[in-house]
Image 1 (cartoon, one colour):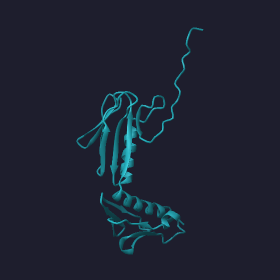
Image 2: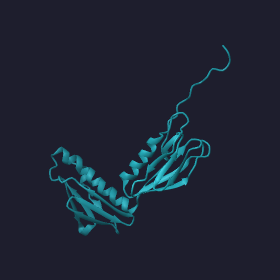
Image 3: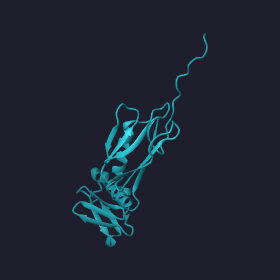
Image 4: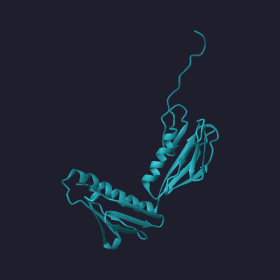
Length: 193
């Protein structure tokens, strides 16, 4: 029995939840999102659209229990997405590294012989605060925002994967709230023995 799945999802003012078959569509001030749930579960819109319940008709089945809480969490994430939105702040450390947006693509210069171009997914917005690094201390900063939590987080992970932060000087792409554990470099003996 899923404790998360049994919690009803409250629908705030200004958000409309519709259901067509297995597809649940949520529309709010920031946009709309849709999710098709597994047919083994039942989604009910209660109290004239102010509450959503996810019902598991077979709580003894393992697969149904696995999907129960996940389905409820995805619907709750859609409601948060259309009301508040999701965002990820990112930073790039390294001398000469920079980021820019050109023609629907995110262009990264992070120490390779070539520029890395990444197409920006639909529904994800990129805002660049600081386009280029200044030395090793001042990073390039940019943010990703959107209605879909999965799309924003997935794109952020793909960007970080291009040049993950290395443990010695911390150069690379990282999340703004990420802590990098630094390693001590080699210590060279001074003087002749």
